[in-house]
Image (cartoon, rainbow, N blue to C red; front, top):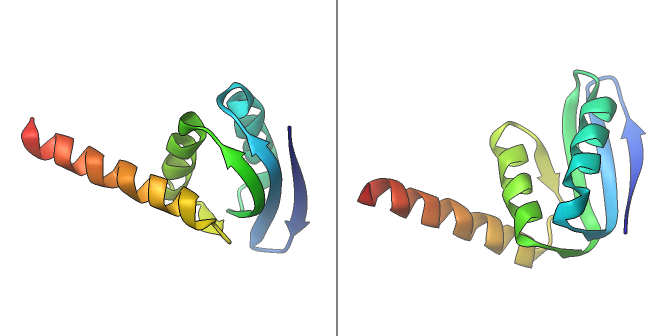
Length: 95
């Protein structure tokens, strides 16, 4: 179960996420992000996130690559995102 609290300013929308983020919730997350961003810069605050699965790690990496800021990202999530980038770069070099 996850929850998002929204903080809005003229330029940014900050979504403070909490709880467990799992793959079966990705569609809800995508819809929430699209609805809440409203053409503003999106910031995801992950300080209260307790558990994620691999599909969410991939999704967060995609969000970050498209310009979303990940704030207060727990170390284990950052490590997994960075490891995914490294393995993706290594796979690109091989092929």
